[in-house]
Each structure stands twice: as structure tokens, then as C-alpha cells.
Length: 182
Image (tube, rainbow, N blue to C red; front, top):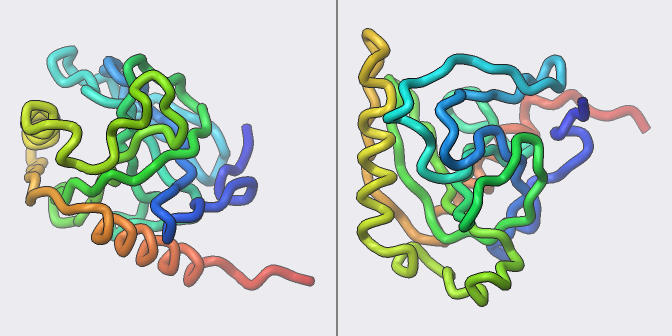
């Protein structure tokens, strides 16, 4: 399997575009995680079916969030995207999320070229309140059956804040990488 952090950059995030890799397809109750040490996707756990992911879930290569993992993305599409798929995505905003003691941001995206919708989703306002309510409910409750684990959605923010979070996470990742030999 490839090392996505070596093969891919995080995208042209200053222009609102990121590169994402899908871990969990929309509708799956399998908690699939990419292991950066082996380059493999692994099944971390099987969640109860009522907590199946309501949206495609993945990560942005060459980023490091405050929780120590690559920065997460939620990628909105009409159909599930398979595990391991690389997507060029447009940023719509961010879900500010607390997982235990750690901030665990979720950058909300759509494919950069979405001819199915005519690229109509341009910001969080375009996804609608009902969609945001469903996402909030999922992330506030998906770990309810895990003893000692608390999650809490802290709110939503727009494109500019999302871009700033990607920038911070990109800088954090660069700060832990050893210098490359020339």
C-alpha cells in the first residue's frame, strides 16, 4: 500500500482545495483507519449500525491535527466513495469537534468537480440545516457505547477558518518531519 504522506501533498488549500484519502465510505459502520507506519488500511472496530457514517470520511495527507492524526475530512457525495480513493476536494467549512480532551476538526468538502450537482455546494449554507443537524447528532453520539469516551460538537465555521486549520495542521506535520537528504 502507498504512503499517502509521501506520495501526496495536502492540496492548494489556500485556494480552498485539498487532497483527501477516503477511510470510511458513507453508510459504513466499519471504523477503518489508515496506518501511517505500515501504509495499510485496518479495521479498528465495528460500530453499531445506528452509528454508520452519514458522510464519506477521510483524511488530508501531510497534515497533523491536534489529536495526533492526519486532519479529517467529510466529503459530501451522492454515493459512497471506496476506501483508499484519492479525491480532490473543495472546502465548504469545518465542524469543530472535541473527542475526549482533543480537538479533532472535520473539514467539510465536496469533490472539486461535481457535475452531478453542477458544483452547487459552495459553502456550509448550501448543505442545509438538516444535513448539519444529522452530522452533529452523529458526532455527538457515535461513541455512546464506548465507556469513558466523551464527544462534543462545538459548532461550525466557514471556509476561511477551515483554510486556517488546514494551514496549521500542514505546518504541524512539516514540523515533525526530518529534513530530507538532497
